[in-house]
Image (cartoon, rainbow, N blue to C red; front, side):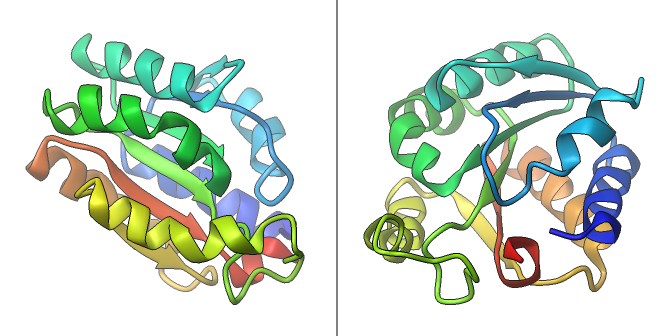
Length: 168
């Protein structure tokens, strides 16, 4: 991902009011991490697994924070129980920032990711998690703000799936 997209995403998160982010570093969106770490608007919590990240983010949301959990697409599989039981069942709004590895538009797609990538959207739909695929930086801030509005209106997790230009 180029620097302008990383800055645009971080700016969008700040403008949307996100102030707490759990993360497990991955390869597609990792350029946002130094920007987030150097921005006092965000409290960052590194985690050992995506499931742990979702649970910690849920706790922060229940404590009044506007939260996001950043992970690779395969992390949705790891955290699906937590997304369902904590996020969906108990109505905890959180933004899932997901690098959509294995998608058709993933420029670094390979046999390692494609089987999981083609099943990510059906998995989110089975969990009843609303999502939007983000392919480029066009209207990025508005899309992030819209996702935060949606998660708060639904009172449950919402996912942004980043692919195409975010995978270069």
